[in-house]
Amino acid sequence: MQVICFRLASAAYAIPLEDVADVSPAGPVRAVPGAPPGVRGLAERHGRAVAVLDGPRLLDDPGTDPVAGYLLRFRAPHGGTALWIPARIAAGRGERVTTGTGDVQGGRPEVLVGGERHVLLDIETLIQAAA
Image (cartoon, rainbow, N blue to C red; front, top):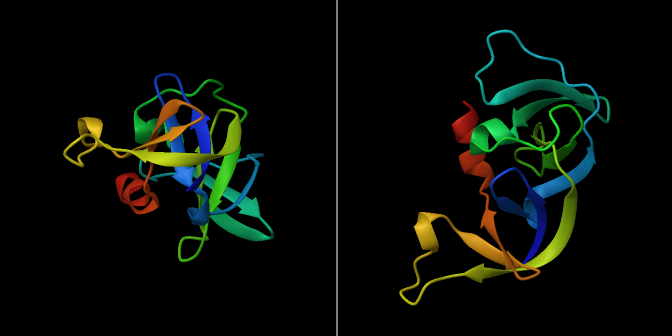
């Protein structure tokens, strides 16, 4: 499977490329008063407002740079939502990691990218955690 991958302070993560519409430098993100903690704010992409989820907060994993970062905008039906990642992003090929019983270590799905384990993130789960 093709993935977008990145590393935060304590783990490496991957998102299936098929779930990502585009990746761009974050630019300004405006805070929204009263928004849940997992929502960083709103950004403008291609003339439209996009809700920006705070990746490090949702993953309980501090980022490497609190200001600079990238937005991974999701594909439809979540095209109005993006994930803010304060780290370098790369694309790669990932192979699912399973144990002998078919279960994944620690109950979190993982993929092996370039010899390194990455936690495989699910877009639906991230969006639900931000609400």
